[in-house]
Image (tube, rainbow over all chains, first blue to last red; front, side, top):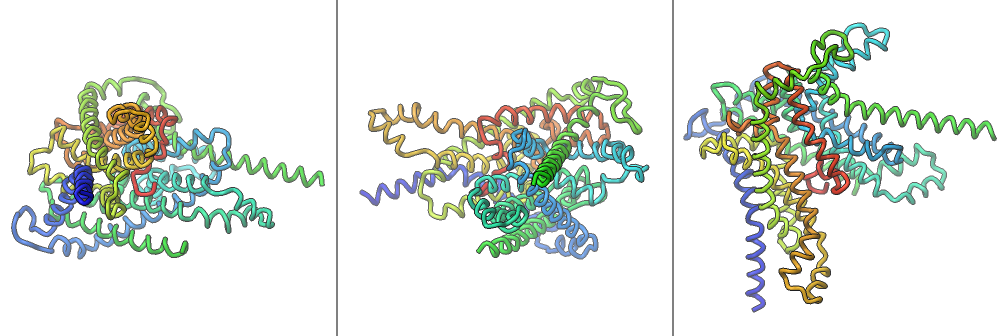
Length: 282
Length: 278
């Protein structure tokens, strides 16, 4: 009797899990498998196997540049986000006037489509944008507009704008769950503000910062809409994939091979990142 | 002693000044892009080194409505988002319940697996989705685009809902049973009011996700299922920045409204999440 009810309970659980599993298998696993198979087929054919798409892409000298660019962009954006988020969270934690508003403002880059964010940033930092106007007006030695759009620096700035909320939200929530007594203890023991920050607060919120930065990194690595419209001649992997199928004749196999390389690189890099993350806290 | 105190005071006010300057710069950095889009969309002849557009006009909005057929596109976007929300919620409720309240061997692993679509760059599996949908003739149908969105919305719904269901207190239900309520009555009068906020917030979040989704739509849309983000992208390619700005404003206002309306009821920080542990 007991055994029977146990199997029944397990069956009910399985039935409940079924929609989620079906969604995962049908809309993620199966498409991934289709992509894998496609990347191993000759272009346009339904039979035969080839590794040609991988080898041609990797042997292209451009491939190294594309992969290098993808990493440079995502890693620099992650580092910028960490620095910026830590400062922002330390400020917001003091609950300055209007801090609720700034907390909400922090989420805006994630709530609006990346496309719109990129459009606004392109306008703002363009040669006729307000940033350049202000620079020309107020900085004596700048007379010509500074080129920000379509440069590496500009792209890193745009990436940071779009993806810092992942880091700042987790950092802020870790910072706010911190016990003030710990800091007071450090304070009473004669540590100055900087020492408290450097040796007590930052190490304690490090797990939050790192967890958030992983999310920023993943989002920046897979970024698509920003480099698509604001990248100019800089094309990271995602745009490179899209270009294969954007023009006729579409090259699905070549695109699939690049997508697999991208997914593979991300998994490898994340594994390394997680390894590094785990070490100092243990 | 007194001068020292004065010095400290000045120092602290300088700190305060620095703090507010920093916050101001941050606020400007977030809002100026949108202000610039808004001005671009109502300005005419804004060229050269001008701080503000010399003439104001609503022509670009008229263009957006007449030429690019915004009403039709908005309808597509809303139909697709509604379908995606419905499907994700229907998937999320049973699966979320199983994750939140039932014993599953290897629950952690299973959950990470379900959340994988939010980790892997969407473009990687969007390729596969597009190829499958071409074979099944799902491309250029509202259902097809919505189904593609479910790939990214459903994991989110499952995560939010499982957290909601996990928070349900067993004792409340027992108390209700002890007081003589039938299971049906318990469900409608005790459980439903408790889980409704969670379900609503999951619906809002999935709606925003679908409304803003670009990559998956770009791979599966056709001429009858163009959505607002895709149309904005196309307009950007056509090079009419003013019209694009007008469309962007139309697209972005609902998202911002939703953010400001829901901020009191649900933790809007969750909008950023949808990943494990956030």
